[in-house]
Amino acid sequence: MDSFFAKTVGINSFSFSRSAKARITPATQVNGAAPLGVEYSQLMNAISNNNTKHIYLKYGGGDGTQGSYGAIDLDGVKSGGASDFTSWLEYGYSGTLKIGDDLLPVEKGNMAGPTASSVSARYNSCTHFQGQGGCTAEHYVLDCPRVLKVLVIEKIGNSYVKIKGFAAFVLEGIGENGEVQGSYIKYFESGSISNGEYQAAQDYGMYHIGLSE
Ligand SMILES: [Zn+2]
Image (cartoon, rainbow, N blue to C red; front, side):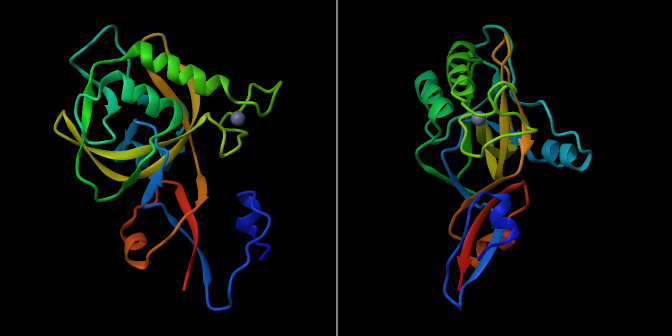
């Protein structure tokens, strides 16, 4: 099938049986997420106001060790600390995160150093659009290291977050104080879709393309 969506997402063709239907739905689970989030209300406002650039995915601030700066403990185990965070930020989390998972703890502390090294490594790994500054929200390749999958969250108190969905951002580098900014983009990947799940999923711009019988 040579479809509009297929072209949009850079896939040349699908082939599938007569009884199956291709479907694009908001992602209800992802692999490879960064340990960062954006609040759902903030993201929805940004999208409806068409003001989706330079959004803070992590805040910065000196050498803080107690405050919450937006680092999320993706394995649910508090105090994995900087080494887990660094690896997840640079390479993505190897597990699957889903809407409806248990609440995830927020890591305390700014971790400016680990953030800077991981974000710089990802940012500098972009090999696309050379001479035009690499991948940006204007031109990007979905599987570029600069493209981050992040959690769309609801804060539960100061120490936990609930996963509401998933969104993608093109990384814009690292600030002096450990802050991370990105510009929102739409993201498509192949994925399995169950009928019940997608109906519950809010659209935050990350989609799964799959077949349903
Ligand atoms: Zn790139």
